[in-house]
Image (cartoon, rainbow, N blue to C red):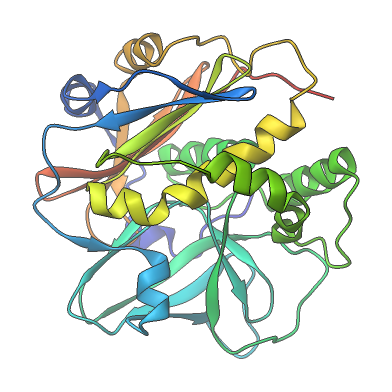
Amino acid sequence: MFRNPFRKHHIDPHPKLDNLDHVRFLDGLTFSDKIEKNNMSYQLIYRKSPCDTQYLGLRESLKNNHLVIEEVSTGGSVPQLKCKNQSDHYVLILAGEEIIGAKQNRVINVPFIIGPKSETEIPVSCVEQGRWSNDTPQFSKGEYAYADLRRKVVEDVSYNAISGLGYGSDQGRVWDDISEKETIFRRRSQTGAMNEMYSHFEEEMRDILEGFDTKKSYGICVYINEGLAGVDIMPSSEFFSEISNDVLQGYLLESIRLKNEKSPFSTFRSVESFIQYTSKVPASITDGVGLGKVHNIHSKGIVGHFLKYENDFAHGNLFPREISKGR
């Protein structure tokens, strides 16, 4: 696994354990009835109130030149990038969001908040093994990593964070997983680029997104083959509305992969049982890459992150660890 080159600035070698803060937050969530679409179903998530702080997302921030993400130097460094917020807004970037361009495409390792008029280095993983040359000097918004890859990155990142090793991932595991999925889907990219897999399923993407309405919710819980696949919680209904299609498409790749399987994606059949399990796992709290604290959840059955700034949980993402292997 990569050791984060800036771990000393962000990681306490003896992180604080807390088993109440995220539990109180989870207790305040409510869920819609299930909505089914082929072998995938979902429940929308509601929280008591939005965060006091208003956040811009990655897509809007890059589009409006509020945010600049680029290589740390001319030579570049695979596991880290430079992120500069040129605006007066707070920007929330989520783990699993892909940025494309520069020397190679990357995904964000851990959720982070970058404050107004500030700059930081960010931990990332490469999702394009076969390229190391400048396409563009800066990055643009790509896809949202599929759920299985997000889970694996969170497993390694949370383990490293809890161990005081920073927010690095296991880069070899990332490349291996993309190659495995290319084999399953029988789609090969010349550079091993994760995002090229998505372009082969545009019809399925349109079908799953047709009629999709966030209904002013704050997140989503997704099931595949009746087994829970993941939970994503956002800071506001507006923020979720902006990113909801990306999140759903990431889960769609998993549903396509497992569409001929009978076994459920995981052993969790309801979000209530999943939340109840999560509430029993203490969080290891580490300093965030930017603002706030990361509450790392890592156990035999689940893995995930919560990101807290001031008095609010801005974001949470959780995954079951015992999942269907598929084909």
